[in-house]
Amino acid sequence: MTPDAQGWRDRFGTHLGTERRLSAHTGSNYLREIDALIAWCDANGIERWEALDTQHLRLFAARSHAGGLSPRSVQRRLSAVRTFLRYLQRERVLKHNPAADVRAPKSRRGLPDTLDVDQMTRLLEIPGTDALAIRDRAIMELFYSSGLRLSELIGLDLGALDLADRTVRVTGKGNKTRILPVGRKAIEALEAWLAARTIAAAIGETALFTGRNGRRVGQRTIQARVARWARLQGLPVHVHPHLFRHSFASHLLESSQDLRGVQELLGHADIATTQVYTHLDFQHLARIYDRAHPRARKKT
Image 1 (cartoon, rainbow, N blue to C red):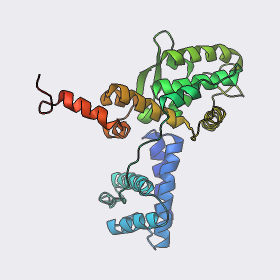
Image 2: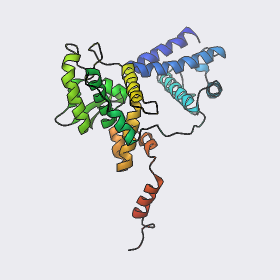
Image 3: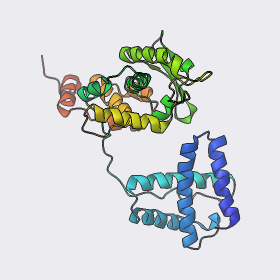
Image 4: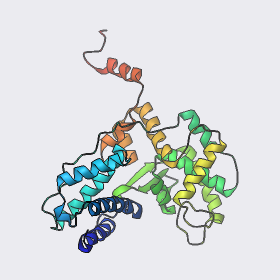
């Protein structure tokens, strides 16, 4: 790629941060995929973005898959490339988006891992009265109570929590805000943490959850602490923060069947994203069908 073509990659990165207001982590993921495309173009003698066509991108996707990327990873890569080329189209570098009709290999969409209710109960009954144990208990209770993403929980400030109203104000993807209910057990754990936090937090720190240094706790710290407690509690699976969100959604749907409500709680823009959690027992669905469908109801 020519230096000018390379420069559009950097301008796209700025666009993601300033106009799209994506997190630095998400922006770096986009740019990593664009770097893979640039490397492929360099290897195939393509020097300018205007020379890229649909056949090139189909070959790029096929080579990515043959190189070991799963169909889902190829989908993510092509999504990033489409977004980048759409940006170049907006900037009048390209007349059309050659990636618009390029599709990745189809992948079977698996169900997300979850903990059952008994496993979740065991995990949340962690022992300890030191500040870190109290904090970790509050973090995990809030994860499970309200279905937060890890980034959402880390970003919480003290003002986001309303103990009296039993709600938490969360800023999610796309800088969208939603108000979520907080359950009784989570409230109790949070009250205990807030009492311990007065000593644990640095002066002037606004973060709800803080680390050993008194400042906002980091992503890796929470991941490590959650995995540690799962091992200590004897759970036979690897537990990570997003597993709480999966379990939250699954358990709510199993008891309520309210897909739209769970979509709102999770902050999903598309209900299709929420539908992955609808792995309800078939016999239960059959009973609902028999009770509700006019051609299935038994005569009384």
